[in-house]
Length: 377
Image: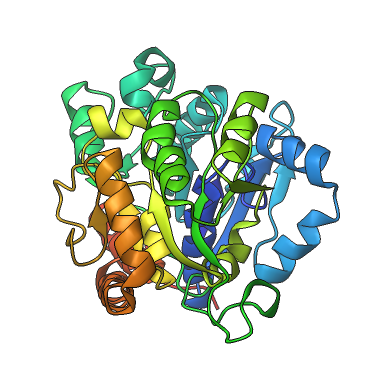
């Protein structure tokens, strides 16, 4: 099958977590023999910020980790869709694509009628910025891939799409897997050198209060050794981290996350407020990746209404800052608890939540909408 993917970026994950899942799905499709053309805008926001902060040489590590991924960079004003979509069978358009491009692809689909096209939504803007999502003309699309049932239902209720399917994100288990501690981040006995690590971005004030309650304050009270990775941390956030004895590690290439997890005893998940309050059932990709690495996880509250996991067995749930403190203390001193959580969470990911599982689902949807399923030679 010939597939075209349009996304904000496949190479840069600077404040762009959607790249994680898109990379995993892309590699899985190609390893199954499907031909994939990836398109990302030249000088996109994420790529521009990554290069400005880290320099162009940082992309060498991404290309080494994902040698199959070679995107076609385009200028929106000069993109030739006749050429880009020649002989394709399926087009996937991620929701961080420009509305004008989304419209143009839909109009091209209406004229060509030789391929199918799906819109892929992995954000909370349908709830928090509905006017922005109304700017996307999906009238000629064959449907929407929504990363949660509540979002899928929203598209249907508001008449934004004729058809929609739930397509959760998942872990790329080629990258995310249990590793031994890195030599530079382990004790002489080979055990993890740190207590708690959190990987996530501060920005947009969507979880500032939650970070204080579920991370900074428990770490301060327990006196644990911790580290935080991410971007868009303002000066006041960096000061708060320092006061909580949390080292700030800055941007972390996503393919290096398993190595960092291997050097810590536990991690936490603190979802952004819109997912907790308005989009139940959507955990975002971080828990999938953490569990795939076999690191014990404690999460602040979110409603797993779709039954993706087994709370209490795959991970612990802290309903308050005090309960987070209690769980973290238990994980520091109870090796059997750490081992049980890590093993159960890893089994759940391998059984249900890998990029291979999501590609199986995508190919079934492709059959449903009439895509030709022959693989490329």
